[in-house]
Length: 78
Image 1 (tube, rainbow, N blue to C red):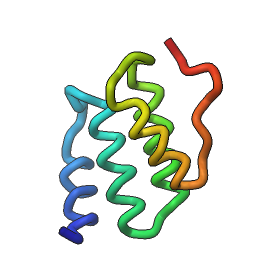
Image 2: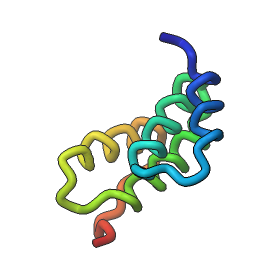
Image 3: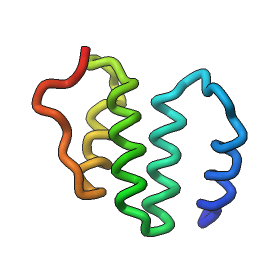
C-alpha cells in the first residue's frame, strides 16, 4: 500500500513485541519498500535470529535477506 513510514512508526511504538521475529520481518519489509537495503538486511537478520530453525516462515525470511544483499547463516541458531 506504500505506507512504509507508517508501518515503521507503528513498530517503533511497540516497546516489547510479543512476536519479535514478525515485527523484525515487517520492519525489514518496510525498509526495503523505502529502498533502505542495509536497514532491511539488519532487520531480517534479527528476524532470523528470533525464529526457530523449524519455523515455516524461516525460508521466506532467508529469501528476503538474500534479496536485501545478505546471506543466511550456514549454521542457523537453534
